[in-house]
Length: 227
Ligand code: BJW
Image 1 (cartoon, rainbow, N blue to C red):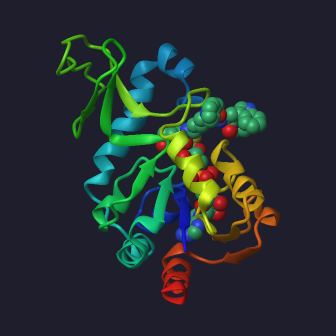
Image 2 (cartoon, rainbow, N blue to C red):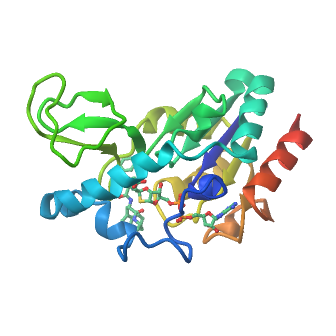
Image 3 (cartoon, rainbow, N blue to C red):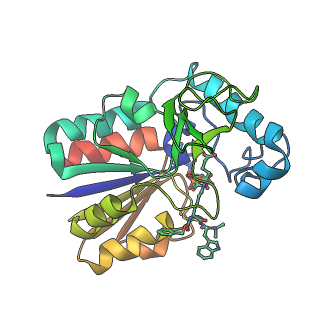
């Protein structure tokens, strides 16, 4: 059985990382749509750097939860037949042991040079305009995908979603495309579809089955069933 699991901010919520669109979703009064665009970065680079520098620093204080760990256990069983596609830029899937993970919206612990297009592992701040390790220009930005930019690894993701027997969505509101459309693509190619979310998402009706509850309960329960 080939399984694709799409994860969103809700899977990391119980690790202490805030979601974007829930009650506590504002960052210092800003909606994500105001700080996660190339235009916002052009207008107010220091504000946008602060958004990401704070979140990068917060990663050091959080741990994967039972939902991340359950997906890592599932990979032990399914091997290459499991792919985790995450919209999250945290590294909690990898830290719980998952190896087959694609970060379609990029990674917090990576920097992208706007001058030479290099990608660099990065754990410190970017706000002080540090030089690029390769070209020396001070043009580093967070290596993440903002609104209007093309998500990473789309060919591999669409290939896997199109071949999946089971498509599972965990902790995402279904408010952002193209991820929000994966369920329809998977279903159209013959996959069974399952949603695991705290509340029904915007696209709940598109799934064959939707279960409600915290990811730390629902994901281990579902993984145990499948194994
Ligand atoms: C729990 C829980 C618990 C809580 N347990 N659950 C009109 C129609 C269609 C598309 C568009 C359109 N107008 C514009 C577009 C395109 C645009 C878009 O979708 N805009 C929408 C606003 C409509 N999309 C883009 O621009 C994308 N690019 C693109 O389309 O390029 C074209 C192209 C595509 C493909 C091939 C070729 C070309 C890029 C989108 C980039 C999104 N970037 C961000 C920021 C990333 C960096 C960062 O993290 O800062 O990605 S925005 C933000 O939203 C972030 C997230 O990954 C993403 C999704 O959020 P997510 O994860 O769903 O979080 P929430 O908060 O929304 O939901 C959390 C859920 O968890 C809730 O349901 C809770 O209930 C639940 N939950 N606790 C289980 N304990």
